[in-house]
Image 1 (cartoon, rainbow, N blue to C red):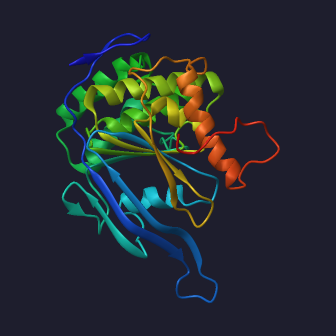
Image 2: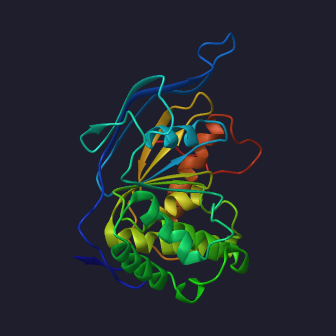
Image 3: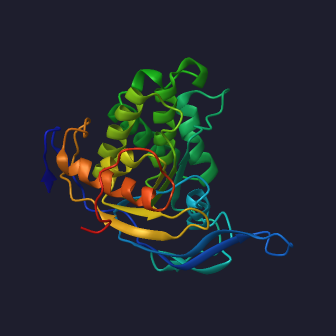
Length: 283
């Protein structure tokens, strides 16, 4: 099937993603000390296969901690996480992870950085090379394949990082502030590129961000977190057509979702002294 909007039409394939179910998850650091610190309190999320969901909340609310637990890179204090039918009790293998820092190796070219996935995961190099070439072309980066990270702009480095994240076609993609170090215009472009890449394969995406606007611009659903210890205070379904235009701010529907989330932060005391339209959290 296909979908269209003010942006160009994109063919949308059947989902390749896995479901993620988070039930009663808590995390306390320093549990064996006299000064334990609770990061997350009774978090529940039910993420459908192929969904793009965002988690937004103030600094220190446990967003990144939650992502690391989904990936199996950090133990839970209590609760359960399932990806597909499997309980997460070890690092996931069928996952792609990207952080704010692109983490490219300076002594490898852009293409060599991407092809590390084949080496680390012991995948057929020809298949990974074919997929790599496809992604470089889709992101208009083919001329950059032979260049080193220091020869690339910040936006180009982050797009190479996205290619490395996607090249093995993971069923789950975890993104932790991947646009945080980019300037405003580059963020818009990379956000649009990410949506287009996601629409073509439909992995399940969990996007951790401080940017309410980016969350609304990318997501099917948004989980709004409270200040620490973090818990979900609202789950918002974003009913906007895809692919979404690169400039969203002029849409009253877009503004409604943004205002609704900022209103939450006002009520929780995260924001004060600014003019955010007053509205009920759940219209």
